[in-house]
Amino acid sequence: MRSLRLFRSHEARRSALVALVGLLAALLVLAAVFARLDVFSTPAELRAFLDSFGRATPVAFVLLQAMQVVAAPVPGQVLSFVSGYLFGPLWGTAYSVLGASIGSYAAFWLSRRYGRPYVERIVADDAFEWFETVTAENGLLALFLVFLIPGLPDDVLCFVAGLTDLDLKKMTVAAALGRIPGFFFAALAGSNAAAGDYASAIVIAAALGLAGLVCWVYRERVRAALSRV
Image: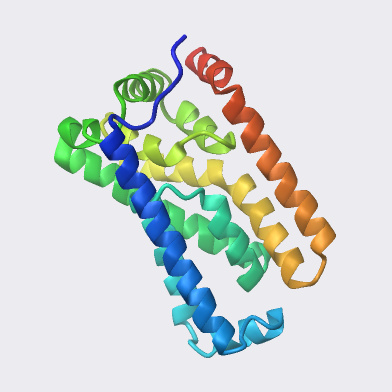
């Protein structure tokens, strides 16, 4: 079985990497600015600084999480860790799932609006064909499982799944439900870090990372198993 490629060309992969580097650079700049303001000295001061923005803080995070799905190949769990650090495990999970759901719906809609040529420009043929077959033959269950299993390129799936006849709202719900466990544990790790319980945060984050790594290493077996669902 061929290895599953996500990007159609080196240009598409380079564009994704540029987007990732741009996002990381922006985060570094923000970190530098905040450091100058001494808001990173303690978790309490960071939360106090963000609280000064009032309701705009969670709104800004939700929009950032939504943009991550559509524009940047950054795992959603990374931002969920940040959300848990800022808002706690429950609200952190809620904001992360809400933002990712908005982004997923946008990706579904974009691919359905602009059609197959739009998706084929950025997604490799083998990945496109497999995702399309899995979602077309197995429907919402396969969609849910792809989002549930860590390490799989679920954001790419959003664009491919949008080309199927599945209902947009039902796909968004399936994606949201599949994301909840991973987002919750990432937010829990962030919340523990904010509380100073770094040992627990590291254990949870390491477990998530290991699970994602194992699923990625054995992605062909996961791919074959999902094809038999």
